Length: 262
Image (cartoon, rainbow, N blue to C red; front, side, top):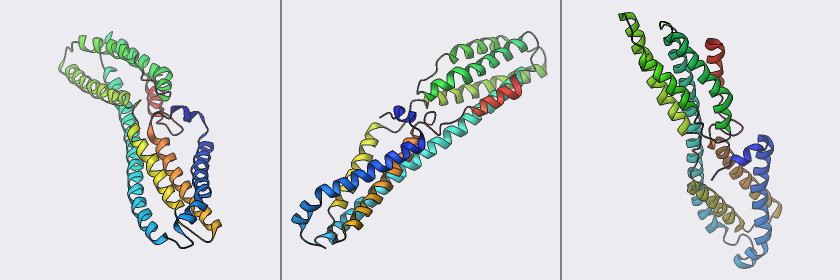
């Protein structure tokens, strides 16, 4: 279940809309069912004691489930951020390694990495932010790999540098592949169905309470709906690390480019 189209809305406005939607749905459901529930269950306090047991049980189960999902998407967001920083650092190490090569390989290898990093910043990253998996970077890395593997070190010092370059290159390719694989991955559709179904069940149970003070009941339903909406908003915001309002930034690569490659 993709929420890419929602990311075009300003974050604060979308947050307010989500809160208002769930709070309004909760209040609206209560107002529509209030009279039928009172006729069915009787005058206050009716069956409130029995209903409270059920809503407590479902609330705990749903709250834990929603909390675990929120923690999971947050952990994925943080992990992706760390991996991007590690990828940029590995690229820096690789660039410094090939800077010690003899000509003409030194200039060619550094030029390939510079071209690749420029492509990553100007083309690949904007594609990721639109949910598109970038593919043109493969050609840049293939050209770099071909040059790197052709290089034949002539001294022990050059062999050590070449060995370090190969190791850095392999690490970078692994990190790059992990980043690309995360571009279109988010919470599974089936989990979203469970999230919305659980919200509906908890709100419907809250409508079954028979309370003398109608204003208090409206307020409690509004707060319950707003809380559920806030947690769902958090999951949507962090669902896709490279898209949305709080997406993972390309700043580590920009820093590498500005400090080493310009």
